Image 1 (tube, one colour):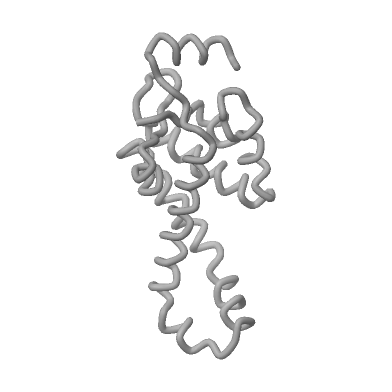
Image 2 (tube, one colour; image 1 turned 60 degrees about the vertical axis):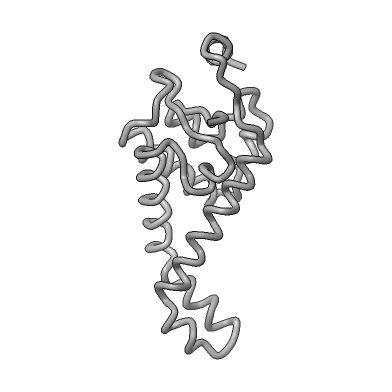
Length: 149
């Protein structure tokens, strides 16, 4: 682990969130956003006659869904330091420099690179599993950590 990060964590008595909590929070957020997508497009989904039509409909709105994910992640991380999933598991995102909620630009950076990581077969998330500070690609680019709240 980076010595600077290790010193900050030790000095401030901050504990990194474990991978299981982060994974569960991720699952909750994805479930919530998927549910909102289905709710928003209910008229179209209810008229789909088979699974293929549902998949085609979902693919039609991929860009909109990505934008919603970025807005959701950016807003909640900037405003509360945590998404709804993270709040449920009592973990939060902090900027390494300030130990506070990420700024707008930091939260936006984190959200965009989170989506990039998802599009690249979740490799950035896998990186976080093996990183000593548990930083995913989106944490590294935004200079953030996910810690116990």
